[in-house]
View 1 (cartoon, helix red, strand yellow):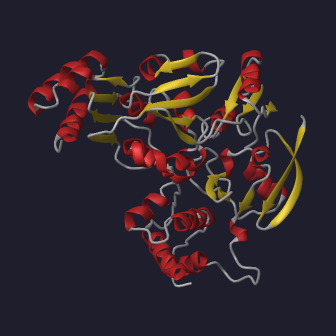
View 2 (spheres, rainbow over the protein chains, first blue to last red):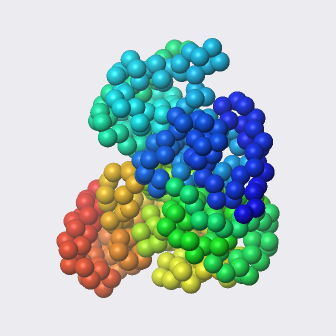
Length: 159
Length: 259
């Protein structure tokens, strides 16, 4: 199969890659770039575990062809912490609220929360619920996750 | 999960895309990908994927004469945040925000919703009430009423380029969808009412068949009792599933309660 040359910026690092036309973004991130924080779960766009941010928007990497990302700026969970390895305020908030149990859904939850707070800095309870509607947690229920987003919103507002 | 092999095409113009669509067999169009990628995971019969990503002129919203023109490849999130859509068609904005999840809305396109998701496409019901006209690369302009009745006829070997909505100040509009949760559930049913100076348009998404305009019910809306009776009669013409009749009638009563 023909490969396609793409240039992408992942977590601030520019990469020139050759990808097969049928390669999924989630497989490129996990398999080739070793960014295994992005989870491959349902594979059909229903659970949100594979959520990454592409050009500022939260998208499902299990439903995205890698070749369609040519020129894109991509952020995965590994790219949220600062260069000094200080956790992002949303990551801090998830720890503070105890919003992590097994952790499998957490990268997707945090990136969905980031997109929500980037577009709606002071979300209402309803907006938080709607903002995370595309992410499923099978462990904790959602209260602590919603609490974490509220804490993060305040922390980011104070920055 | 690995996808089957296919050839990937990136036309730059509608003409190039049109040529590919009409000449390649076992080809599918890739716009937002939320439907096609799932299909590719289940089917190895697709041999060619034609991406619309680089095709010029398929995005954005603009006023053209007395209409609002929407590019078919505009993603739903951008569309719902578009100033012109918010200014002229709040009902469309509301319907988009009820559709699927934020990630899906960030990826999926309005054209994809119409061409891949009927009969349950959320937006067809609204576009029908808004008297939309669809612009296809090969078949030209098609009224939404004709499109929703036989969408495959229009979408096969063609590309939806844009959607035209006549500008008409709505005196009243309403959209109601079941289930009420804004999650991945496809709609069981939806109702959309748009009232302009020209009259009232009520479109009904029956969930298991294509959305239709309930003209007699719309004409009776000034009298709620008569409207409920008219709705029951029109519903029976289109909905043969007895279990759905009662739910739809209940939904309609809720819909008109505060009109």
